[in-house]
Length: 313
Image (cartoon, rainbow, N blue to C red; front, side, top):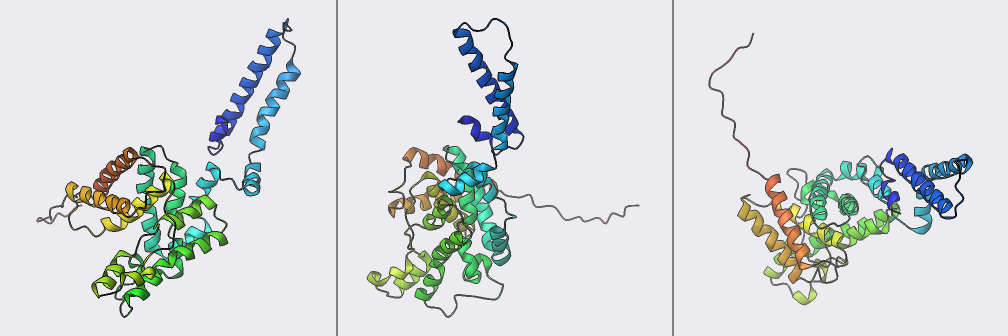
């Protein structure tokens, strides 16, 4: 079983096949020895059959694709394939919503570091990060990362209209995922990356203008709360990547406060209550994200201006 973990590593398939051959050969001769049937080595034909059988595991590799489709399975190879940014859907995202595409790449890097820290499924969370916002392709200008300079999409719209347009990217993303045949485990990241949270900016504008909280359903995402560690990581990294761009001060304390504030707000909102993740793991993820953000937004050296003109021969 463990041998199949290496199916996605090219030439290592042959190493796996050789290991299977050695294991089956040793087992075969061990039973022969127990039965007292080994007097001299003359089982060349049996060894050949064992070798050919082991090599057939490599030849059967393409069948994995078929079995995945029949039994609705998702192998590591499939996830790696989905993370290829040259595939049609991700190229379309990069073309129609370049800001969202860059955001997704950054979220993927954040999530990768966090997932490794608690032994979550790294390849799954990477795939989820790349596709979580594909629904924004349908209306890219609605989102600030894709805004054309000088064009303010939300000017003239009521908070309700803005919130309706923003929250639509989740069902739009699910529709695109189904159209392109994305696996269910990847589609789940689209549904859960906002959970049942609100579009905070427009919701606050609505309330500050005297809006009725009992009639504010339009401001809330109609998604589903995260139920796995990977989905929790995705939710946190998505929010953090966007929120970190609003910081004016990238000191260690400022970044730490941001991470703590976002994690606490998600917990207080009940977004983690359905997920199989411990407080210890959440603390580990928080520390990793703080360190990662500090590395991303580290201070740079200001180069001195040259005062003397130098002419090179």
